[in-house]
Structure formats: C-alpha cells, structure tokens
Length: 472
Image (spheres, rainbow, N blue to C red):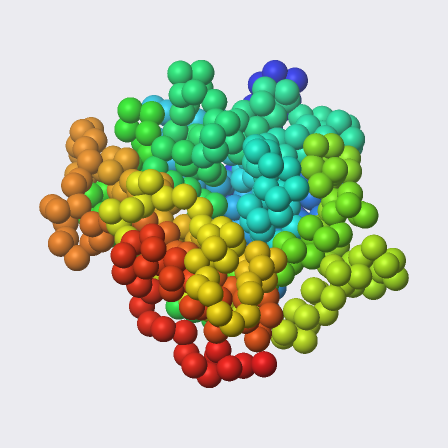
C-alpha cells in the first residue's frame, strides 16, 4: 500500500479515498439510508469515537419539526456522516478527472473529508433555534455562531483526545468550516481555493452540505425530491481555481436552490413548527437564570454537554424556579400551542428598509375597546426565505463551461434560460401568534391595524377565520 507524507502526518491510499475494493472490504463502514454504505477512514474514526462528536446523536437535524412531521427525527450525527462521505466523493472525483493539473493529493482529500465530518460539531440544540431565537434574547448584540463554535470544538477534541493530526490540516479544516460564514478567510490567503467550496461554499452556495440535508430532510418528512446532486458531482470541473458546471445543468442548479426554498416554506418554517419553536425559546429563557444555559456557549468543555435533552431535564426537574419553563413544555406535549393568528409577506418595495416587527408594534396598534393586550400576550416571528444569498440570485455567482473541450468559463443571465424563473429571490414573512387562545381575535385585529398603518393596505392574504377567533 502506497503512502504520502506531509508535515508530521502520513496518509495511506486507504485514507486518501479507498481506491481499491480490497481496502473497502477491510475498512469500517456504516449503512446510511440516503447514501448506502459510508466507509470510515482511520483518522475520521478518531474524531467520531469521542463524546463531543457522539453528542450529535442527541441533536435533531430539524429541531422541533418532528412535532409536525413525525418522521423528522434524524440527527446531526447522520447528516455529518453524510457530508463527510459526499465531501470525500466530490474531491475524489475531481482528483480522478483533473488530479494532475490541480495537484490534488492525499492530504487534500483527507482535509476536505474531516471538514465535512466536523462542520456541524458546534451546532446548538433544536437546530437553528438556539442561536437565532434564544441567544439574541439573553445576549443582546452577541455574534455567537455555530460555525465558530465548531472551530473551537475541533481544537478541543484534538487536545482532549490527543489526536495525532497534522496542524496544517486542522488549520485548513477550520478555514473550510468557516468558508461560508462572515468569519471566512480572505481568498488571497488560501491555496487551492476550489477545495474550500466543497463543504461550505461562500462563493455561490453550491456545496455538499446542501446536497445531503436537502435529500435527507425530504426523505425524513415524506416529501418528494427531484433534485439530483449526483449529476452535478459527476460533471463539475475546476477552471481558474473555481468549481464550475456545465451550461446544460443550469436548471438542475436552480432546482437545488428552489427545493431548498420550498423546504424552508413548507417544513422548516411551517407555522406550527414556528409556534412550537417560539414556545421552546420561551421555556429556555425562563430556565436560563437557574440552569445558566447561555453561560456554556464560550467554553467547548462545557458546551458539548448541551443538547436537545435539556427539554427533558427541565420537564422532570422538581425545582420551583423551573415551573414556568415546565408549564410551557407541558403545553407543547398537550398540543396547547401558541395560536397562529395570521401572516403577510412584506411588499417588495419595502424590503430594503425592513425593520423587525415587535410585539409592542402589534399591541400599540390595538384600537380602544374590548380586552387590553399586553406585549407578553403576543409573539412575532419574522421568517426570511431566500435562495441562499439574500436578495441576490445565487445563479449570478456561478460560472459555467460549454463542454470539456472548452477552457472558457462564463455566467448565464436568467433571462437567457427561462422567463419562468423568479425575478426576485427573497421573501420576508411576518407572522403573529397569540400565547392565549382567547386573545386570537383581538391580536388578529391589532395585526390588521398594524398593516394598514404601516403599508396603507392589509398585506395578509385572507382574514383570520372566525372559528379560530372564537376558539377557547
């Protein structure tokens, strides 16, 4: 078996991509319900077999979505294995087709695979609820992100378990994890920049992280998925240090982003899912002072102990200080949820200067008469749905090539492909919930008044049903 050495580390051809059937036979593997057999190399196993990585088994990939889609109980653990596998497959295909001209070696392959494996190791409980709904309310102005915590966790795992791994590899792994975040390293400082687009693509959003979670989430929720990432992985090509795609695959790429947007609209931000998430966020807020939940977010040695099981811990704790949090969790189990009143999409011409709508905005829009609303009776959720790059069309950042005989890369304007593609790439949905069923009518009316005052029209599609207003 051949070997390749860089720095203090050596990589056998087994670790570089399992190139022979004999090597596959004797490697450890797990069977994944999306990708089939996933073969695990020896270095990856050193990270997987740690309590910090095994924690991902207790983080549901879609947070509280299983309360609406019962099959959505898959974890960050299996997603991370999936991204590891696809990252290895992607870089191996590039090596097979262009390895000599790109200089892809065993070190590069191992680095990309480890980045895929560990990209979510710093994720918080309940999917993105922890950092988007909970932390901003207890740490105003905090810039905490799960990507940065993943980077800290990588160092912690290496130090805690004395993993013998090249320091340059770990440096690149951390850079790859941060590649699509605001903390990414400038392009000029990166060697083989195309490698940084495989796991978390900050350039145009096409990466194996999305390839895995889109297919995996669709399957878990019982939804059809006609996006085929295999086509893109088989035909992609590096030109001028950038992964490019065949021009004929333009609509396949658009399907990637449109499928993601559909998942956000129908699954991730389903009105009832958001209602439950708002209740969980309130429960965590009520429990924070007693359990000091937010104090663990700086130190990986404390943070890895935090996972979705905190809800059960709150639920069974006898402490009086946790009564309000317990009551909220009990309401979720008994399906006594915050009641969805109504929603509207912010008009396109108002998106540029949009400011988050608050419970105070709704309460102050109540007209005299009837029950008096308080801010604590109302919950507002602003849901942003886009194609992955805000108001910008991600397709504008993608470069294509005509065929394998051509070395020219170029972009394709939307209007040259189809007039059926969306001309605008972002929605902002404002939703209002009543924390008490008997207040749905009053809050719905105040919400309508807010829309009239703000936009001069009722931006919502239809009125709140009368039977919902009368529900007690």
